[in-house]
Image (cartoon, rainbow, N blue to C red; front, top):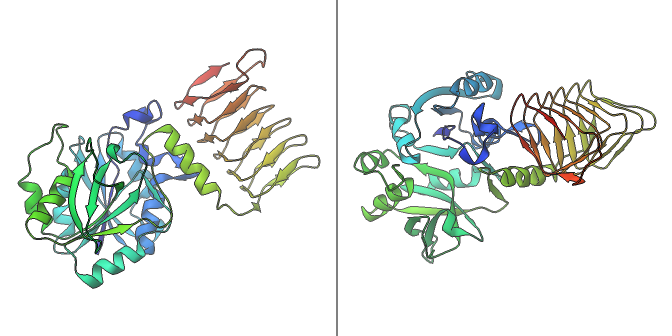
Length: 357
């Protein structure tokens, strides 16, 4: 089986962070989102992976993933260009997939529990397709599947006004080559996209057996800032304590905290887990890093107070104003005097920005 990871899309809901790169490269718990997808494929023994490139700085995806050898896989790059839908991206990979079954994995997904069981079932049972589903409170915002009593999919609808179930399509699909002629016969939807839900439903109407796999752990679609922060929260719940840097006398590191090499937590500073701090950072003096915070490599926090946030890296944050539930881009400088309300700032700051609070 081969794997196909989608790294295109405009990422409009994550601007300004996506003005400078694909959303799939935003780090969550200090690891780019796309690497979680790649690791799931590798753990399912899928090592031949095609990466679909969009038109938002695809060179950054190539720079991160290379030929895949660093990650224990082999990567082939496939250019989609402008986003024309998931089904269109799948069609772009037809020559890469050849006659092999393949797994399509949206690169802005994070899934606890992996896909190994799903892949094994698909290979053993010989289904025409298998689709990962998750129960959600707002199914009208997703593609929605309806199942029969045996777990087979009997209908698929994209963002229905009146959903027939609460089972949303996660963005992980196991497919065979019989999907390609169906996609070629599709017409664009009202969104001017080729919809994978329509292609799968057409496959079902042609007699294809489509199986559902239900998420047993948790799943997040990281398309919005609040989703990224929630995914960071969920991932940090599993972090293990490891201190590879230096904690000076008089500094406090409490709970499950991972600190990278070359990082110094200075006297008078407090880090409360769960949290991760990358390499070569300076935390303090007089700095508080609260729970559920990820600080990327090369960052410097002095007299700062930050909680439940992501700092992508190479940032400078100075001053006592509290920062909460924020996404701070790479090479951002934030300074505050601590003399204004509100006492807690929620920020989304793009790369290479300077902000005086």
